[in-house]
Image 1 (cartoon, rainbow, N blue to C red):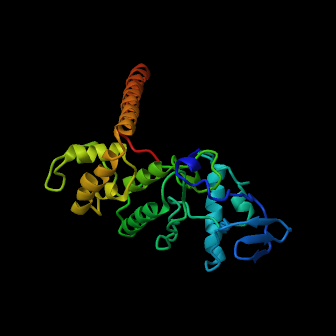
Image 2 (image 1 turned 30 degrees about the vertical axis):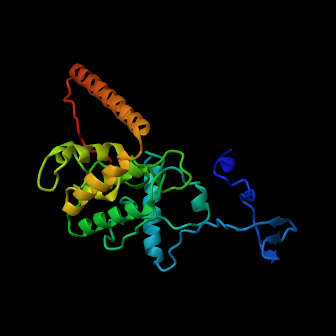
Image 3 (image 1 turned 90 degrees about the vertical axis):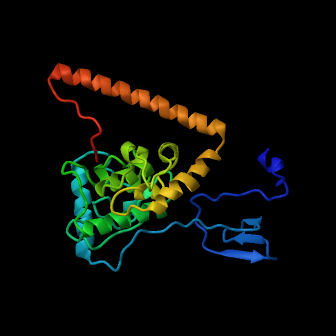
Length: 287
């Protein structure tokens, strides 16, 4: 239907060879392709999705062992999926990543691993940019990590049932990393009108209904920039508005429902703490 709708019925069908090993390809007449098993196809293009092996042969065995020991330590401690030792990726003898947000090892703060986490939805480049910001702040002693915050495989941003041992929730990961350097947006900072923020409601709506874009994490903190305020209230705002009324109403409805669900949870916690004689805690950080 879609091929007919977009006038692409003349295109050749797409053949998938999932998990198929091809040793050689013999191309004849420019478009006829014959594989080593004798199968012949008429194709315009062949895409080889080979993937890659995560390996750091230039690192010393001592550093690799430190990462491996930290991973095993987290796995024994339980938590958010750290016990996934039989993961297919590590069966291929892939090297491990450090424990601190998969960026650094505490013993070697100057050695950073940028861009190796795998988001469930989202792009790796903006995550890499925020990782660099975190790394620079860590070198300056400006990272404020919670002493009780879980690290690595036990962090809250780990994706459950993930295919890779470093699969993370995009938005959750970005906010946890940004919180360490005091760069995560807050309601008060977004709604505060100033020379930088001339359109506070635009900034708030863009943050609530948009994605975890890097400019949002440069509205405050050590890398704050007026240019990022302008990008948020203009370019990113326009992207949100252009999605159309139906999608914006749907997303806004989800936000409102989420607000009432969280409010109900807060009331239940107040009642529970009142019965138990404890003090409720709201707006607290978590790992």
